[in-house]
Each structure stands twice: as C-alpha cells, then as structure tokens.
Image (cartoon, rainbow, N blue to C red):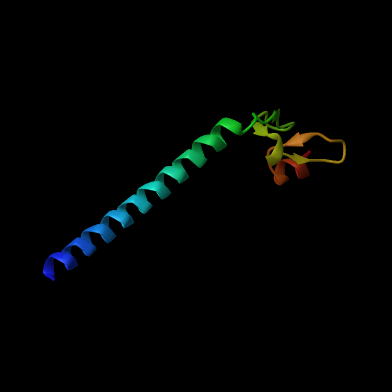
Length: 76
C-alpha cells in the first residue's frame, strides 16, 4: 500500500512539473512571436525640443505639429 501511495505522489508531481514547464514554454514562445510580428513605428521629432518620439506617443497641435509632451504643445 505504501508503494502505491508513493507511486501516485510521484506521478502527480511529474504531471505538475510537465504542466508548469509547458506553460513557461508557451509564454516564452508568445513573447518571441510578439517581438517578431511587431512592425516598426514611425518616429517624429518634437517641434519644440527635437526629441524623437514614437508616433503613438506624440501630442499633436491644431496644425498637426508633433510634440513630445502636452507642456511643449502648450508652449508651441
């Protein structure tokens, strides 16, 4: 009886280890795929200070000039 219990504990431990390992592998492969598929984003120079900022982070004024932050957009 004690060998049966030991066998069950070992099998459950191996199953948990395998599941955890598969989950880590899935997360790593998803991250690698996301890095490969991400397209480069255009960069724009701030009209005020000249710092280059990704297009998604730019603050635009009424004349469509890019700025690195709202403060620079207010200052013009």
